[in-house]
Length: 435
Image (cartoon, rainbow, N blue to C red; front, side, top):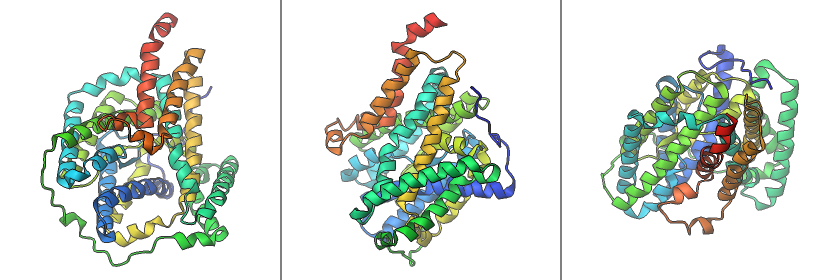
């Protein structure tokens, strides 16, 4: 089994044209995440659209700055950065206590994560991320994102278009795979970008009624968000405890994301990259809390993009970070940016996750130790648990203890914990005998 080969390595800089196109490709993937999560949090805090857009500006600024800092001084891996969905639980739970208590707790959680990281606590966890564990994480990422892909692929302001949207996504994805088979070089590397453009144009031509549900564009929003932060520190023990549990889940998510990319491209000095990456995640969340905005985390969908484009260069994300920073000063553009149909975004995500599953299968099947029935069990249970938790109804999730909801209500976190137990506890003796 041949390992994946990349057109550009981790520290290689592609030619300017490809660099820009690949950067726009990463940007097109990141923007829906930033917009979706940012809108949710903004809606929890504010009723007026202008205030929500102002909060969104902060989110764009934090994500853009965090991405650049991680790429150049942190883990220095081609990893997507975005607002941490895991922190939504803490924010929602602390609404009654007010923004002061919420963002004080967020800043405190970031500070504690930083201190634990620089103390070297996470450096000793590298041996836990064996090939079966990393392969499981790669595949599990795709499975746990299935609810979001399904929602994007069927959502519409017009309910009668849901079935048509799903059909469009299936045909759209098949077309992407067909094109991928017959193109190479620059065109394959930038295929996701072209798919987004072509998919958007075709969708509006085929379903012009979808425009009826498009949001109105605001053109008179002031860009003075950086000067409106007034955070009153408020130490509420209950809110702090909720956020500390959320940050435990965030740290597991961050570790899984870093090691999933590390397992795919196999860079040097991984322990140092883990320490720097987690330390900066802590610092960036601390600063975000002081700024009254949701903090960032390293997202786990990057391996799929790397596998589908054949490019592992971290510098391709630099243009995306710079554009995100620029967009944070353009509130009208942020309001307009929701113009990409969610159906097209869902189709592209489905294509990326298929590539990610392929990368995970290559890693586990191509392992030097071979693939045994026990490997299948190590992978199977975490995948099933992650899917079950990801599709749990809200009514069931609301019955979980509030303090444990960030852990037990997150399919990715439950899956990571399960694969660790299966690999290093349940089948530990078996693996020791084989060795």
